[in-house]
Image (cartoon, rainbow over all chains, first blue to last red; front, side):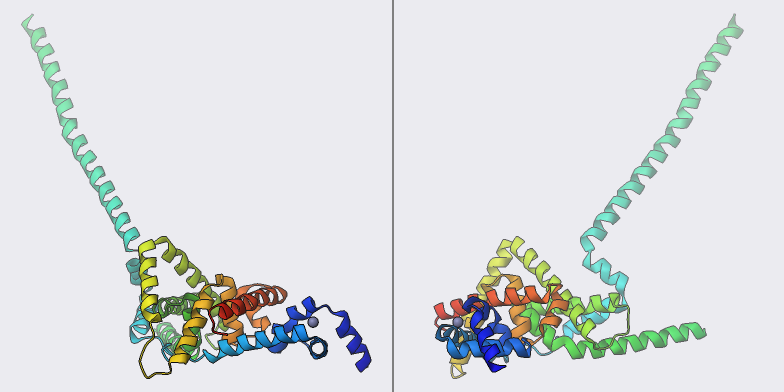
Length: 147
Length: 183
Ligand SMILES: [Zn+2]
């Protein structure tokens, strides 16, 4: 049994082993493959050196895990903003998209103003046209009666 | 009347569950975002947004679970990507960010454990040299101790691919750390 494993470990190339090293260190490999890596490392000095380097990197990274300057909690300001956003979703949306909201407001104002102006012009033009027609008619009638 | 009362109670309960979720995950998410972005004030904004999205979009009960945790990490990742894109578009803001870093990188607090501070800065700089995807996997695996399966749930990558990227990232990190003399 042990002999079989030793043979399998030998058959795996160094490159294959190196690909498994992180998983080996982080205990993500199953029992079988873990044994294969261990067996290979026991015999192969090159892979052992690579493994040692990798393990140093992992240790170095993990030694910086607890940064005293890193915040552990959200600030009160952030909490306040979260609460505001979830209790007034519409107001929050508008304040985030204020450029869009103000553009839309301007467009709507312009449209309404345009419509109102057109309406005023039509109302002003309409009586004038009628008056001209009436005048023309009046002139014609006068001419008729004069004859 | 009765219905309104019920709705209020439900809303109140959801809010309480939400607060518990914030307390449960804020530290880990802040750490994760800060390491992705190399900037803790941006991390704060990103995490804040993620919690707001959670409240609005999470359809199930708000209780700590693997699914909910993966969802939060994923949202933080996406927000961080957006932030980085926005930041690189605003080049002067980007410049400011670099200057802030220069200030932060200056050896600080005489008498404090300087070598620990230096190591921390070396690691942070080395992480920043990795592409975002690689950095993300290193942070999740080495710092947050997530399993490949959890990482796969967070990133949507297959576990095999996670292993591949991580392998590359660690190799590159080792080289960078050796170059800067940290290793
Ligand atoms: Zn070997």
